[in-house]
Image 1 (cartoon, rainbow, N blue to C red):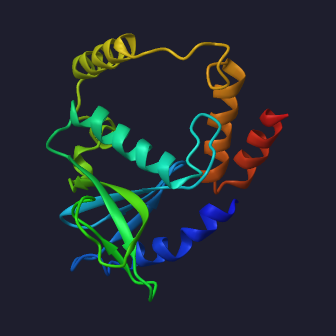
Image 2: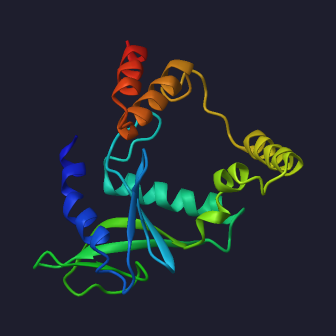
Amino acid sequence: MNIEYNKQQPLITYLASGRWTSEAVSHIETALSHVFISRSSVIKLKKAIDAGYVDLRTLEMRKRCCENEVTINKRYAPQLYEGVLPVTQDSHSYFSIEEAESQNFKGKEIVEYLVKMRSFSSDGLLSHQVLSGVTKSSELRKLASKIVAFHKESAAVAVQDPYGSFSAALKSVISGCLSLSKDRQLTEILRELQL
């Protein structure tokens, strides 16, 4: 863990407490983010880490990653992605989620950025729809075609780039799995793969 990541702990506690909303909040941790879900909204806090394939150790890097996520995903889910919100902290260490970056924060410092989304039912998740049999194989083929087209249109990373090699990609996948694994046997297997 780096110092920047440790600095996020008070904010994670604040966001998990639900004090930013009048609704109950659930907290999910992914390889790159902490996701806080209320009945009406979802906010994502990028972890201050270097995952191998993306470096999020500085505030500016996390802001750019949030902006990129919203820009890319708004094309396909404009009804879900609302934008990037700054988090400020005052001299008494109180956090506030601001609605816009351009406003005057009156003595508060921007300490983090969040992706804001509209909340939706877990029934809408592809994994749920596939497991429950709601999604047909023909729909999955259409989705796969859209994903392939998206990646064909996207700029490729050169193999010489540190993030473009197979070993770098494999290392980042294993690292992400290790950060989320709670299964001791799986963790041991993943650690062996790292060698």
